[in-house]
Length: 254
Image (tube, rainbow, N blue to C red):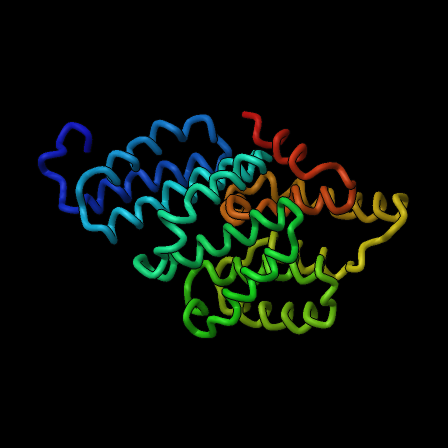
């Protein structure tokens, strides 16, 4: 593509798709240090003089890749700063991009506030997604929203919600060809809320989850689900009380 820019479409849809494919692969495998070069290519596209809507979509991709890198490596302060920096240029113009992109941005913000332990803000943003009704319901990312919401509602101690929502999600995934072990892990984990208060009991529960977590870490298909929200790190954080940013930072070293 780089050697044949004169032959690209306007806007360069296939070129953009190729860069996204590389970035998705690098993100899934945790090779965050390899991503800046390809992010610079997205920035070049954004400055290419295309329509405002197209450029805004590219901006949303740049933001999501950068933000995911920061979150999944435990750089929470930088992640909060990035969110603030994109408020005017991106978040106040979300209606100009597609619904799937909007949903991913909303979900990313929920995860940001969960990671930094601002559950009040996370709840507010999640409510905004859920209250949209059918607007987002059929989109590919919505199942991830429901799984993250299980973890959030468990933290908020809305235990009555969990059982019915788990049954509903299970009914939906029963029709899918690929059922992730990570989904089953989330169901099992939130079913243990409220979590044990005493350290000895938490350690015992942590040991029960470790073998399942190790099997997920070795499965490349499971990693796709984890690139948005690292459930494995979250469970370790909740059961060991080790700082989440430290767990993610250690996992992010490649």
